Image (cartoon, rainbow, N blue to C red):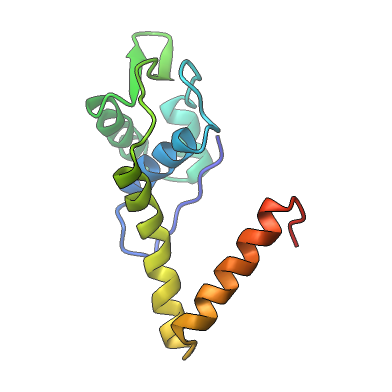
Length: 130
C-alpha cells in the first residue's frame, strides 16, 4: 500500500489517508481481507505522527471499511460494498476540481480539457500508456 501525502492542498493528513485507502479499495487494489500496514509502519513511511494514522484508521473503521483484529492488525472489511455511482462520482470530483482550477490558471478552455481527457481515456483503454 503506497500512499502520498501533500502538505499544501489544505486537506488534513488523516483525511488524505482515508481518501486514498477508500480509492485503493474502490479501484480493486485493496481487496476484502487484505491487511493494511501497521500504524507505526505507515506513519514512518509517510513521516507523520502515528496518531494521525490511528485517526485515519479509526475513521475507516467507523465507516465499516476496515476492521481491527486486536493484536493482529487492520484489514479491509469483508463487508466492504462496491461504491455506488454517486460515491464513485464524488471520488472523481475530488480529482477533477484541482484539474479545472489548474486549467483556469493556465487559461486553458474547457473544450481543450475535455479533448485531453478523451484522448487520455483512449490511450489508457487501448493499453498504451504514454
